[in-house]
Image 1 (cartoon, each protein chain N blue to C red):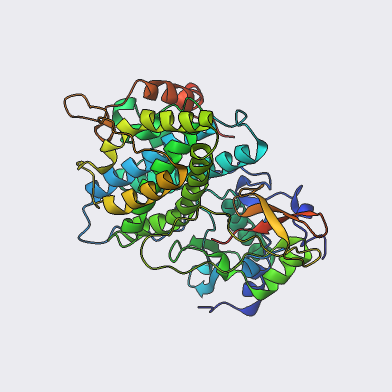
Image 2: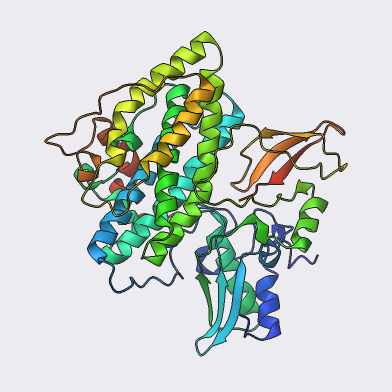
Amino acid sequence: MVTAPRAACAAAAATPDPELPMLTVADLGILRAVDTTAEGVVVTITPTYSGCPAMPEISADIRRRLRRAGYRDVEVRLRLAPAWSSDWITEEGRRKLAAAGIAPPPGTPRHRGPVPLTLGQPPSPGCPRCGSSRTRRTAEFGATACRSLHRCAECGEPFEAVKPL
Amino acid sequence: MSTDDSPYGLLDDDHDDGHRWAFGTGFADPLAGVEGAVPPGVDRAALARYCLALGDDALIYSHRLQQWVTRMPELEEETAIANIALDLLGQARMLLARAGGILGRTEDQLAFFRDEKDFRNVRLAEHADRDFAELVGRLLIFSTWRLALFDALSGFPDPVLAAIASKGAKELSYHRDYAARWVVRLGDGTALSHQRMQDALAAIWPLLGELFGPGEETQVAVPAGEFDAVIDTVLAAAGLDRPGATPLAGIGGRTGRDGVHTEAMGYILAELQVIARAHPDATW
């Protein structure tokens, strides 16, 4: 639901993610709502990872940007459910990731009942530099909670990918 | 992109709330801004006890994993363990904040100013891994159990606990798969790695009983069949035997969930709490 003036929405939406600075919170799909209430502007976001240290930074930055845009009373609320999924990254966000050399996440598999165990290596995404599908995952965990490390056999370049969550 | 929009340009910018773009300089309540009313019909005291127990599991386990950082065999595993520890710490913070919101205490008060007998974590969480095989074997057991538990909790009547569990389940599923792949690799590896993996399981197995036992704070049952199915699949792929260990007894039947811990727990808390207790009003 968006009931706030367009300027407030634009100011909140343009807030960058500190760990993936090429993406805005809108690209990342964590911006849930920007509303105007009697108390002022209320921005609702959904956290990505439980321990993600970027969340307080993002909240503070949203408040700062809205104040700079002229809104005095700004509140940032967290909405925990439904939990964020990498499927919420927009098409624009995916393009920006690829342009920055980071492979966007594949779709998350749907399952009914218990989460199936994966013992083999999950498929590695295509190389964001040369487009080759001859890549392999070199590490499941990278510099931040949301990224994994890969290498392309075609162009030889290592690259990062956003993990499906 | 104007300087104003560049996140790097903001590095030297003054932020409100005392935050800077360096992480970890501004700790806020992890549930700040979350609609937190406990629904009518939910027993508040029981909910607080349960969140405390689940939060303590994650806090103590995370601390044990953090102790491995700088000691891992390869940089990739170092990063993996640090990331898993961070996920669990995030879960702990939200669960302790949920419990604290009901009890009138902050997450820091609960983490740093409770004594051993007031911690409600299962004893599996405090176990000191003697080697990498114990690290991955214990992580397989813990994350498989916690994933089944969090899956069951995603429909819990308290929406905050249900949301924390739904989110945590996504993280636990890749913790489990990471641990499972290593258990298979070691079990199905050399004669030495196989033996050490088998020995590791034997060391951990006595701590399993507590995970499925009825406790005062238990509010949902972990589907034991679901847990067994995953563990059996991994053990079969690894060529490992399921140990036939006797569960570690409690004291007068009381175990970790009752605040009765193993010798390891005092050492963990000493390290975890010393700074906060030495400088109770410090901020950084």
